[in-house]
Length: 337
Image (cartoon, rainbow, N blue to C red; front, side):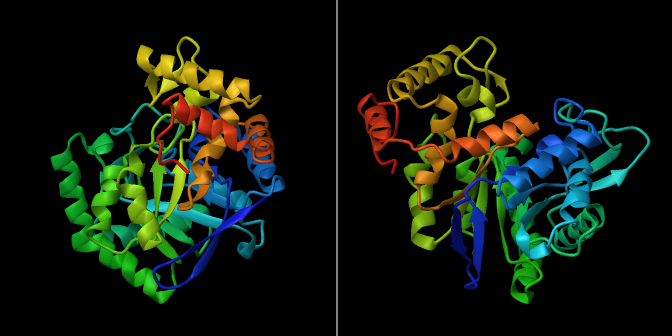
C-alpha cells in the first residue's frame, strides 16, 4: 500500500496509507452489523495493508469506537494511524432523545454538542475509554458546518465556540505530543476555509466535496492547502453511493435520491470512463489522490467484499488520458491535477 506523508505545523511527519478506512458503518449505519462481520471486515482492512483508521463518538453512539478499539488493541500500536473526533458528548439515558435515524440498534444516549475546552478534554477521555486505548493520533473538530447546524449563522456560532475554547485544548495537546495533529471533519470546504483564517490546522477530513462530481474546492480552498501545507483526508469519494453504483434508479447522492441533473452528469462521466476501460468507481476512488494535498481517501467499507474491492482498485492503472478527456467534455474542473 502506497503512503503519503503530511508534515504538521510542528514539523512532525505523519504517514497515511493512501487508502484509509472510515468506520462509520461499524456503528450500524443504516443496517445492523454483527460482531463477527465487524471483526472480519476490520481484519480484511488490516490484511489489505491499510493503516489509517478514522472513527468518531457519533458513529453508532460510541459503538464504532468500541468495536474498532477491540481489534486495534490486538495490533502493534505503531502499525496504525488512528483519528477520532470531538464536539459531541454522549450522555447515557433510558430513551434515545437524539436518535438521528442513521444508526440502528445502538447505545441509548443523549447527544450534547460541546466545543469548549472542557468539552474537548471530556470527549477525548470518553473516547479513550471506549477504544480501550491511551492514544489517538489525530483529532478532528466534528461537524461545525451548515449541514449539521442548519445555517451559516448557526455554523459560525459553533466555530466561535471552538476558537474560544476547544481550539486551545487541541493546541495544548498537540504541543505536548499527546496528539500528533488536529483539524476538522466537516461536510463542506467553505467551513474548512473559514477555519484556516482563524487558526493553524494540520489537516481536514472533508466529506464528499472534492470528488469526480464536485471540484469547487479547487477555486480557492485547495490552493490555500497547497500554500500552507495542510493535508486533506477525503471521505465519501462516492458522494454517498452514486459514483460507485452509477446512475441507476434510486442512486444516492449526498444521502438522498439523486436528482436528474446529477444522474445525467454521472452517466456522461461513466461513458468516458468506459471508453478507457476504467470503472466509474475506480476513477472516483483514485481521482482525489491526484491532488498533492490529498493524503488519503477513506471510503466506508461495509463488508469484507467492499474492502477487498476498494483495495484491488488502488492497484489498477488509470490512464492520464481519462482525466484529459473528462476535461475536454467539460466534466472535470480545468485545474484538476
